[in-house]
Amino acid sequence: MLLGEYSHTLDSKGRVIIPVKFRDDLGNSFIVTKGLDESLFVYSKSEWEKFENKIRALPITSAATRTFARFMFSGATECELDKQGRINLPQSLIEYAKLKKEVYIIGVSTRVEIWDKKVWEDYNNQDNMNLEEIASQMSNLGI
Image (spheres, rainbow, N blue to C red):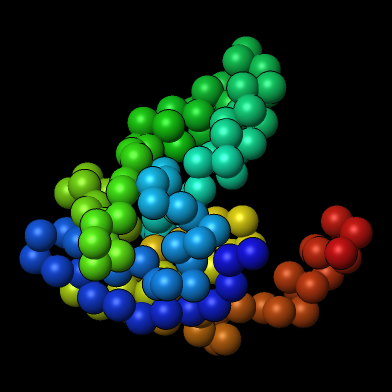
């Protein structure tokens, strides 16, 4: 399970270290794609396959399905760890997530997310979250 929050830096070549605690679950090669909320999503190959199969099962006649599939798959790339435990992010993904020098890499159960430091801190600000409303919505989902 992927858990935790780690602060790292993106170097001038677009490389970032993947935390050691995430490497066993992700493997040496994994998928990075555009995520939601101005972040990047990182999936192990097995989790990506599960995700891909769910998208394939949706009706192609749905405009929302087609749009979501295009969004997720067009930005996807396979990344491999180098000897220092880094990956090289494509410029298009760096620009999409507005990544600067300082980034947060967080574990979200079955995936990892990569965020620009300021974007993550703004998103994660308690003033921006109505935890009571979120808890109520989760209750409606049976959680």
